[in-house]
Length: 302
Image (cartoon, rainbow, N blue to C red):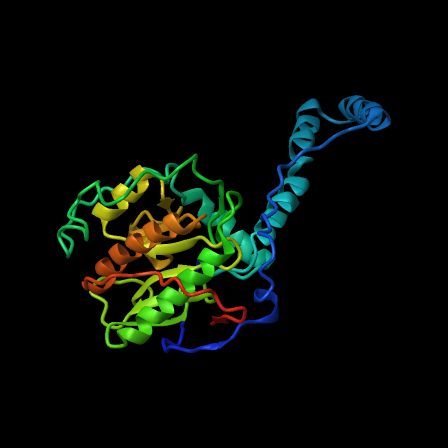
């Protein structure tokens, strides 16, 4: 996930044509690698192995057999990277190679909270370490794939809730322009994001959160206390690169994915999580309330 330059101004433009099509949720294709040999292919493969052992050294033949699937594995993995759609990393083979390298350093357990040893400010999270502010998320966690982009590939989010969330973030920025603004995400380099005008903790230009149009999930930065409860209650998981150290050049240690809201009650919970994210980045307390007006057929994006 590259962090590049982004103009942080509140810009409202008409939604692109492809974003206006809010039909059914399209699950992101993520294929497993498999090779199936029919009868003739299996016989030819066995004969080729026998001949290779007779002509070549057995150890060299074994090496060739071990490496033979590698091109197909790389091709399948690259296609899965492309299928995740546009994100902070260019959808090119060079972008894929970068992600393949970073994958070696990814978190092995995205559900365990980060261990914080140094002093941080604010000292205590938005909800004062209370578990009661967040209910348990219903059902199992959704499947998550990728690093940059990172996407939710099942348990479809509700299109109407996605639009209501966008409108709510835009309304907050309009009502409190001295504290917040909306603009293109600095992390994703596309999509709507909420920024703090005067951030107290370092993120990408004060970005609090951003939403993904493709899967309706979101990324945000949270105080470690609040992140711990979000993880325990099943509402999200840590980003694979959110481990601190030299990885901070990609995403902050406090960077989490929050799953797409499936209904109005889940959207209300997500708004409470965003309140906590806003507190961590801006230091301000605010209420993010979803209005009940119908969503517009022509929405705005960045």
